[in-house]
Amino acid sequence: MVIAIIATGAYYYGFRAHDPHVRATCRLRDAAGQIDAILKPGTRVEYVGTDYTLQFYLNTVRPLSTAGEAVRLMALPVPIIIIMSSTYQEAIKMSLAEMPVYLLFQSEDIVVFSNRPPSQT
Image (cartoon, rainbow, N blue to C red; front, side):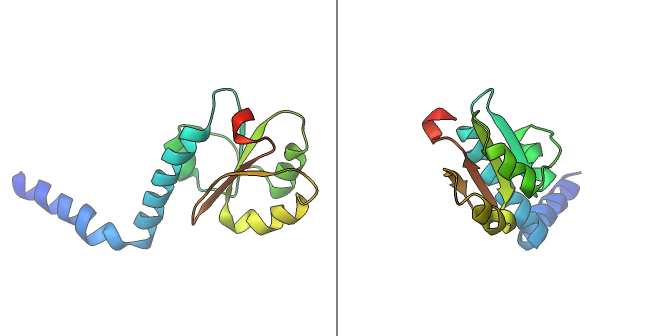
């Protein structure tokens, strides 16, 4: 039994620690911890192109929105937070050039922004 536990620990924390998928999952877990500190109860949150792993760590389950839907939602008069994959950032940034956009968090994989300053979200 002890050998099985040691072997399992070595496999997951040693051999797989450098696997790109494991590293990406760890980055999402770390990002979720920082994003969770930003989110306030009752604020609408939409996801664009993110991995569902991020929603797992944030304890939410929502369908993904499209980039076009995110732009439309940013124009609403209510506070909204958009959590997106960083690959969508440039496409949406161009569409939001005329609107006030507040960057709340950015990492290698995730960008979080809002249509309100952090104190109002």
